[in-house]
Length: 193
Image (cartoon, rainbow, N blue to C red; front, side):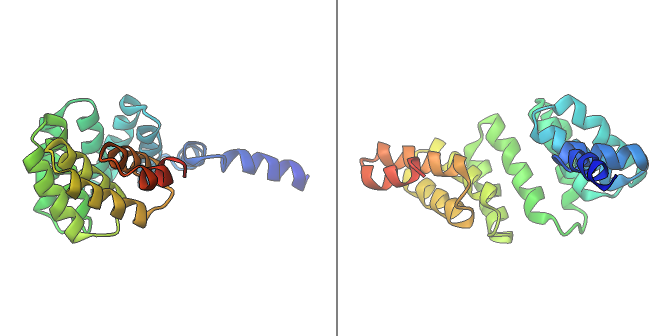
């Protein structure tokens, strides 16, 4: 019946993982499905499970820049920073249309290694290239804060929240930072949202 079919289809569309798993089971050579299922697993914290999916995507389409960026991010999360860096640097030499994400990826590597000055440099470049990505502003704020540049960090956090008012990590960080500066009323607005 249609009701049963709709119920089964709704289970497939439950989340990214179920959707892309279904697509991949029906089309095992679907490059986008490999990448997107890997991305879903990466977002869920299943980093080890994401890597073979990104690699399969790249085996099928070696110049697929989204899969390269996601593979680099996975490597970085596992502490395989040199491998991640090599991918990002290789991507810099290509015309991908994803320049801000590539530059931000390099910023992420420097943030992980504690080189905040370099992280700020790359995040600032990425934010200038694509000012509409709130995660870049948030990460820039983390690096600025670690350098003791609290005012600049607040400005960056405010921009991240302006770009995406539902970005909870940015709201909380902004609230905590403002509270630390004694701006309790403004902090409360962000911490209670």
